[in-house]
Length: 221
Image (cartoon, rainbow, N blue to C red; front, side):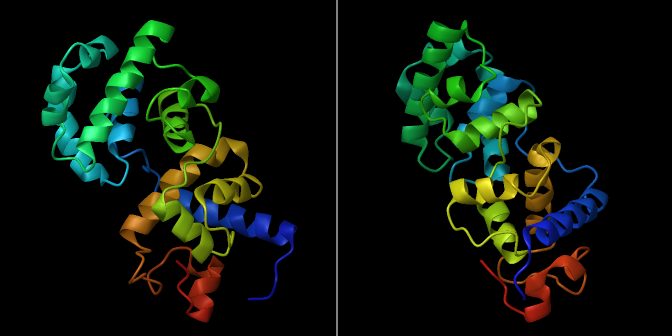
C-alpha cells in the first residue's frame, strides 16, 4: 500500500469508525459489572483470561463481595479459592486484596476517577485504568489496547507499532477523543465476530474497502 499522508490516514480512520459504529451499535464492555468496583475487580481478573471465563467467576464473586472492605476481610487463601478458575489466581487474589486495602485507606472504599490515582493501586496498569475510566466514569483518558485492538490497528494499517503503549499513542493521534472508549469496543467486537487472527472474513467484512490487508492479502498480526 502506498504511504499515506497523516491527513489521509485520519480521514480513513474516520470512515472506519463510521463503519464500525454502524455495524456494532450495541458494542460495549463485555465484562459484567454493576458499579466501578466490580469493573475494577473484573478487569484485574481479565489479564491473560477471556471475558467469558471472568464473567463465570464474578457471577458468584460479586454476590459474596459487595464492597472493598469485603475483599480485605477474608483470608487470602479464601479469596484464592473463590477465583481459582482464573489463570494466575494466586497473584490476582493478592493484587485484589492490596488494591482494596488502598481503596479503603486512601479513598473511603470508593474507586477513584483519575488515571494517577488508579495506576497507583496494586494490580492496576494503564490499560485497566482506561477500562475503568471509560466505562465506569465516561472519562476518555486513553484508549484500551488489548490483543484485538493492537492486532486490528496494525491490520487496518493505522499503525505499525507493536507495544500497547505505542499503539495507544498512534490511535490517539487519529481518533477524536470522544471516540476513544468506544473505539476499543468496536475493534474488539469486530475482532471477535468478523476479523479473527487466523481466518478473517474479508469477503463479508463491513469495512473491507478501507482495509489495506484485505487488498494486499497480508493479514497483519
